[in-house]
Length: 398
Image (cartoon, rainbow, N blue to C red; front, side, top):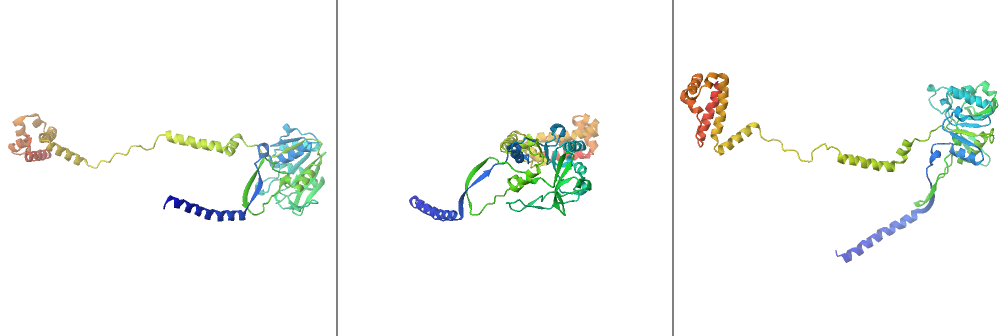
């Protein structure tokens, strides 16, 4: 087909295919604009109480965040508040004693029960034992929570419920729960208070991270926008109620029970676009410059002839070059070495005396021995074969 006919046909086919596809795409898709939130950076990436701390600072309170409880380093004042997200079962006895002594001086402690799990391998935390709290054997069960003007909520669904001893019951100021156990209790302890909670998930929150706007086409459907943690209104109200006893009186200590990621961990998980290509380049360079496991030259061909074939080929070459005397001399030398080993006296003789001694030793005619020892003519192939045969026979008879 000629070029001036081919190109119009190709363009017509492209139009027939692209126009229906474009109409279908525009009818089934719509252009939307959405905001992509980037992952949190810095402290916000490992501190689940970061949003709570920012909210308290915005309210004019002094806030200190700690990865682990350390009473000697923290030295909280009597009017301070400690939110202990860390598992109380990890606290040693001296730390528990120092914490309770601080509460007796007027501190406010918020602590959660241990997470649910295998109670056969778990002991009641020393802090909860000292407060008269029993959590072993209790499971998790949602607790209805209603705030005026908000939708109905279910709280503490993943937390471990608990119960109070008779001594602790006498110090209760507030409690909340049902027949399955309590999810919240506020106890007096000296001049301070202790709030025991089934969990503190409602205090967690992700910060407002940097974002950018993306315009894209997607199928026509609705997108959900879930909200959780401190972004939920009832959760903020509940957190504000729990922090009320010492609110505005002192420092808020947020013990978030996690450690910031190490430099090596951040390099591994966040720096892979840099180190992965470098690693592949290094491996490729090492592969190019390392010792090879095989030769670049082809392997030599294996020998296709046996030793006997080589000997026969050498003999045939000598015969073609009229070197039969050399073949006879080689066989004669072989015979004389055998004679030297078996009859040294005969081997020491020369000429006719040697021929006579060999004939006597082999009981052969002397003429036959003389014929075998004499070199044949260069062109006499028959005589050569005959004399080599006689020399080999003589050698076997020795």
